[in-house]
Length: 428
Image 1 (cartoon, rainbow, N blue to C red):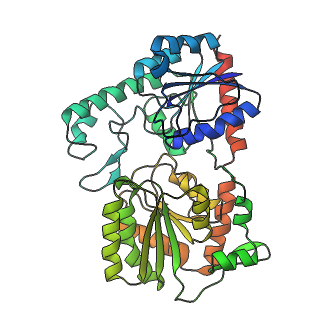
Image 2: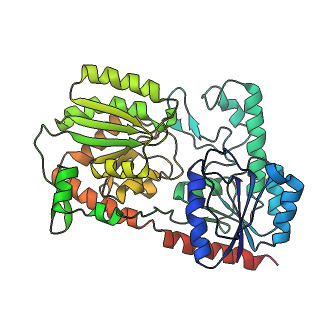
Image 3: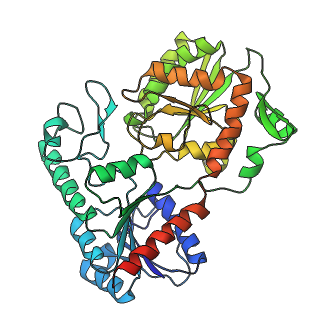
């Protein structure tokens, strides 16, 4: 099969591009030919998505729209696998070239701002169907900025995108929540598919999930190995419990709510907490000031902000922490950081929003806090439930590995190819 991968850029700038950098080699290894079509090839400082040797790549910015489309047309793709494009007119042109499958990574065509969240008077997920009525809520609920010009521009863009969604031969997504969102917006259940996302298993992750006695005693003093399984060692009350936040530091990622939850969690557990915020973003200075104030008033809290960390450093953080906290206030389409931590035996506490319940099962690999609305008290209670009992924490660690292993690249690829073959066979 000749598969044309279509995205706004070929540079690795976010989660979509990370996904493509992983799935393209898998498709090539399965014997498929790959081409890449993009609007731009920027930002230049970011690495390009890797392509198999000999695979063509075309950019509108380099060739112009007409020639880039002609090159794609002359390649005669069996299928177009489209992700995020910024120009609806170009997107419509690509749809006409070959049978087309769209991956709905986010709220593309279903929300003016794309966040699907009311920010006022309280932050809570929005469950409205996208339409002109959303314009009435945009300013009162602080859905975006204050410019009416920007609001109308985004509304028109998302309206165009929604029309295009209905013209795809199939749409795939990665959570039950996102599938329900698509169907709510009129997509046929016969052309919309949800199948498991994947967690990329890196070298050493199997070892990290079930470490040796010495490795555990060095890296995570609160656990030990018994008969090949992870169990909690029940450390003294003086040993800090280690919590981790990782990702973009944006308002809707909820770091401020996580910080608000820490004093209550520490008091309920009767233990000091060591908390790491790994990542960057515009909210970092705000969160750092909030953390500094908390530490002055609560000496049992130690909070650090190392910034972005590389994969090796992240694995080291995961191997030494007791709990991943995912305090997202917006309805995350999936929330990959949870299963990534789970693969290394780390349970999670998170709000029950969006696609999070697809990978976080109460009492199996962590606990959910109510998400409508999300509150610091609810999150603190979920954290406490994860950590209050050493025996249960040990079971959650084992459950984290079991659940994460369900999200395999093999299962994802098999489901994706089934959709491709079905779509390609339907169109002459």
